[in-house]
Image (cartoon, rainbow, N blue to C red; front, side):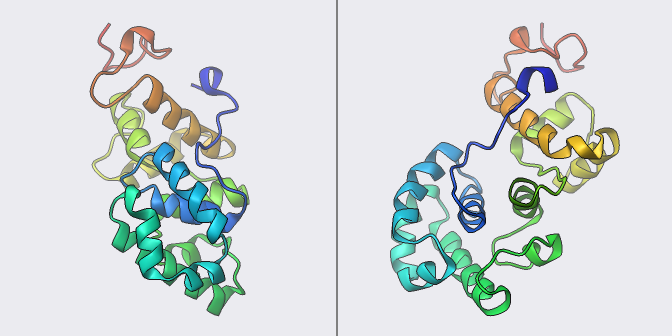
Length: 196
């Protein structure tokens, strides 16, 4: 995977740590492509915690509606913005535990922000990473946390963040959920799930 996807970067578009955090919150159960369409409009209007609060829940819901779960996502973004202003001077904290205490921020989101924004080694287990880890049997698990811990054991720590991106792109391009392209997979000779 490293050979195939070397240099892979996130598909989400952002210009600040706060924009990244908002984009990742919006990406739950939504494609990065759709999130980018929404944030292109949103970030022109509001791209700081203060501006999000000033935008207000109702207007934010209207803008983020195409991302799904828009009421909860808007509520979480406003709640997170308030905490960032009240407790962190408007800045996104670089501490994993502090991140997970923000509304709408679970392990996956915290790992993405820690990894991408702060260059802290992390493996965020999204649907692609979960599927590939289980299909290849390199880190089997029934929960994202089990898979995350399994991957941390077998991947050198300095490659955690990169490996996360390799697996995401592999899941998007080749090891898709419904019709994996095993015939075109660089892992088909070693993957126990390969249908070649």
